[in-house]
Amino acid sequence: GIGVRSVVHRARHVDSNAARVVKVYDKARISALEPLREAFQLHARLRHHNIVKLVEVCEDTQRFCAVMECLSGAPVLSALAEESGVESDVRAVILQVLVALKHIHDQDWAHEVSQANDL
View 1 (spheres, rainbow, N blue to C red):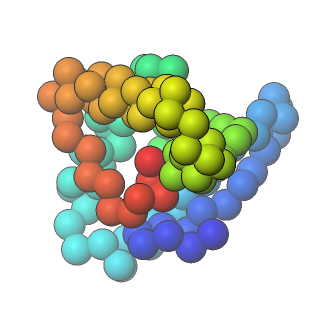
View 2: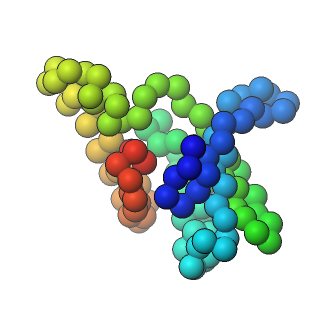
């Protein structure tokens, strides 16, 4: 799909056949490259069961490619909508998001969510 800052592709690792997501960023559309590089470096260090793992970052003269693990299931907002208001289930999903955000902040990093679908 096409996101605000990247084009997202599903892929498979050639050797392991593991599902991956590849986010391709066009450098010409990014005003400051260094903050994106720093965000990749910080994301690569994050290890938490509620945070998508950044597997690898590749860069050439025209683009960045971020290779991430591919998770099954629905995005958080979709999962909340499917819970049909069952308070305990909604609470569990929100708690997972908060635990992940706390982990990110504990690493001295504040994550910018440009779209609700990024959750």
